[in-house]
Structure formats: C-alpha cells, structure tokens
Amino acid sequence: MSQNQKPKLILENGLRTDGRKPDELRPMKMEIGVLKNADGSSIIEVGNTKIIAAVYGPKEIHPRHLALPGRATIRVRYHMMPFSTDERKSPSPSRREIEISKVIREALESSILVEQFPRSSIDVFMEVIQADAGTRLASLMAASLAVVDAGIPVKDIIAAVAVGKADGVIVLDLNEPEDMWGEADLPVAMMPSINQVNLIQMNGNLTPEEFKQAIDLASRGIQTIYNMEKETLKSKYIEFKEES
Amino acid sequence: MSVTPSNENIIPLIKKESMLVSLEHGIRQNGRKPFEYRPISITLGYAKKADGSALVKLGDTTVLAGVKLEEEQPFEDTPNQGNLVVNVELLPLAYETFEPGPPDENAIELSRVVDRSLRDSKSIDLTKLVIEPGKRVWTVWVDIYVLDYSGNVLDASTIAAIAALYDTKLPKLLQEGDSIKVIKEEKGERMPMNYPVVTVTVGKIGKYLIVDPDIEEEGILDTRLSISYTPDKRMVGIQKFGIGTFSMQEIDQVESIARQASAKILEELKKQLGIG
Image (cartoon, rainbow over all chains, first blue to last red; front, side):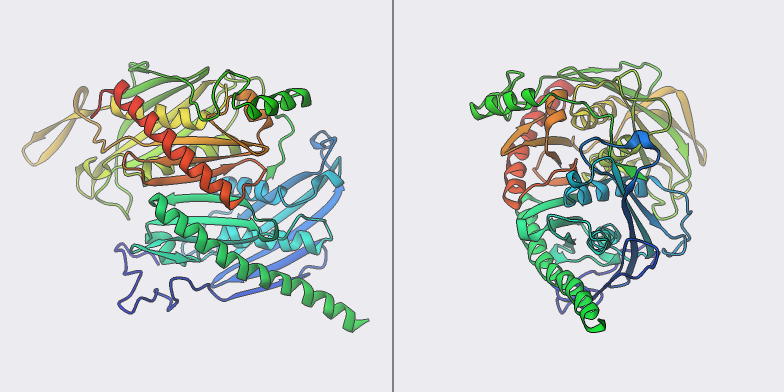
C-alpha cells in the first residue's frame, strides 16, 4: 500500500475502496478463551486487522513498590509484531506504541472495578498480528473481552470504532487507505450501556459540525459492535452449558 | 509497558470537596471563573543560538521552545516538503516527581499531540522548506522543554512551539550558478507560517467543566480533553488524558467551551506575536 499518490477514496457510485457504504462496518470476528495459560484471552478480527490479547491477574504485584493501597495496578502493553505491517516493523517499542499503550491503559482502567483488587496487578498484553487500520481500537476491544473472560468485574464491555472523513464524506470504521489518505481519523471507544466515552482522539481536520456528525455515526456503529461482543460472550457460556 | 502511575500528586479529600463547593458557586479555588484561562506571556528570542525560540508562561507554568534547522534529504514519500520533528521533555528541574532519563510515556504523548496539531493544522507551509526539490530540504526541529510545571503543559507547549516558529528565520540561501548554497551564519527568510494553531484543555471534576486546569486541579480531575483549533475554527486534533470518562453530551459541551476559549487565545497570540 505504499503508493505515493492519493487514491480516490469515494468512488463514483458513492461506495468506498472496499465496496462499503459510508456508514457500513467492516466484517468482524471475535472469540474468547483462545489461550490456555492466560486467565483471560481473546482474538478479534476487524476487516484485515487481527489482534490477540491476554490477561493475567488479578495477582500479586512484582516489584512490590508498584502496589497501590486502594486499587489494582493495571499494566498494559500494545505491541505490533514485526510482520504485521507492509514494511517490517522493528520489534522494539516505537513512540507510537508507547502512546497507544498509555491511551489503552487509561481507557481500560476506567472500565475495570479496580477498587476491588487493592495491592494487586492486572496485566494486559495485546499483540497486533495483522495491521490494517483501527489496531488501537481492535486491541482495546480484545483487551476488554479478555478482561471479562478472566472473570474480572467491569462497569461495561468496551466497544469502539473509528470514524473519519474521506474525500469530504464522513465514514464509519476507516480502512487503511482512508486512514492514510483521509482528511480525519477519530477513534472513539465507549461503554455503551452507561453512555461513557473511555477513549477519544482525533487527527486530521474537521469542522465542529462535521465532528458532531462523526461522533453520532460512531455511537451508532458502537451499538452494533457492542451487540456482537455480548453475543460472543453469551455463546461461550452456552457452549460450556452444553458440554456439562 | 504502560503502568498505572503511583507517584501522582496526592490531594487531600477535603481539598477536593472544597473545590467542588467553590465550583457550585461558579468560582475556582484559584479565583478564576470556570472557563477563564490564565494570563499568557511570551518572550521571543530567549535562546539566542536557536534559529527561533520562545519562553512562554501560562500562569506559573513555564515552557521554553527552541527551533533548529538542519539541511537533510527529504523522506521518500514527501520529496517536495520539509520535515517536522517535535519533542517535548519534562525536565527534572520542573517538578518534584519528574526524573532524568529518556522521555517517559507522558512526554512522548505530549510530543505526539503537539506534533499532530502542528502537522494537521497545516500551520507551517512545509512545501516552502525545500532547498532543492527531491534532494535537499529543511528539517525543522522543535524542541520544547518544560521548566516549571504548574498544570496544563500541553496548551503551553503548543503556544511555545507556535511562538518559536514565528520567531524563526531560515538560514540564507545563495544561488551560485547551478547550485544553491546555504549560508548558515546569515539569516534569510522567515519560517513560512500560514496561521497559528492553539490547543485548549478542558478538565472535568464531577459534573463541572473547567478550562486550563492548574496543578492542584489536575490532581483531582476525573479526566480532561484537549482540542486544537485553527483561526477558522477547524478542529485539528483531540486527545483525552487520564482515567475517567465523558458522556457524549459532555464531549459536545467541552467542544463548544474549548472553541470559544480558542478564539480568545488566538487573539492574544496574534497580538503578542504581531501577526495579522
């Protein structure tokens, strides 16, 4: 995808480069309990983006001086595998990965009932297997599902989607060309049942009117994704029931 | 790995309660109104060896930004523009809990947010930073150092970066036959700036929203949202900081509060920098 010329993002028929309508999500797949050792785990696929996440904890914290008296310490790492991108990415953490680990931690922390686990740690690891736009949000959702899979109480599951502007059109769930060449990228993550936004960032440029339109579109997309997440969790428990 | 910080300011609960009581009466403990910004003072040319510099005070928060230009090859995907590199450092002399060493996640996040505001606003006309198309361009290094931490370093850093850029003059270029020579000792044209950009931070305490939180307020904020604006009121960057959450309605409110504040700050900037 290393073209130098900006491609047309919205085609003559009003559809996007991958054939979607402006308000259409990419196909998604999610699964929990995919790793044996981790206390909770998940795999999520959003279009061609693929993330695996694992949660260890709540457990005793090491080193001990990181312990917080009234709540759990959350430790988060977002990492891209060297082969997850078009050009090989060095495995050492980039500034981008450091920033994303921080924003994911902050978003995740506001969903977990951290006060229930004083002096302990909850470790969350996310690995990007395939990167094709929207990796921070797919990672955050994978992490949220893995936290729930680990049996850790949360206020709500996190659902997230990026909205943006491509060739002047407000679009839902950006794909890679839109992320790269579009006019704006606005990732939003929410706990939908309590109408709280955990993560919001934006780069590019939008007028205040476009911004309002964009966050409305994001809310609608988030609701659809939220229902899929709930389905994923429920189906796991139905599976267990049938086995026993 | 990003870890829940343990060395953040601890503010007594009684302080938080008294702040909330004040806010209920529409006033802050520091005497400001909820949407009132602290006074801004700008000293241009504070670091004389830099190609441009500015010392910015936002209340007691003090930030020094310096610009240096270096001749380099352009990036492959942008052969006809200059490069921009922004770095923010939280110096150990600025605050008790800041430690020496490579930038931590807070400094990296700040750098990247300021970088995105400068870049996405198209505040600098990078296409005018070309010496020889495809071969030689200017790399603009914007280094921002926080000297005294008294809350809201992000807004102060963006102001300092913009002020230092407006203060910058490029080295002189001399056409010699077919080649262009750079005369480092002599100053040439001004940095090609299109317009300034500002970042406005709005904090949330309980149900209250406040503009430009100071250090004590930062200690009790649930969360904060920073939005960058250009003079024609385009939004050119958003970042949410901290653990708490906003409702969609609050985000809408924050946007309109920040937009109004941005107009005032831009006016102040234009006055102090002497730009139209």
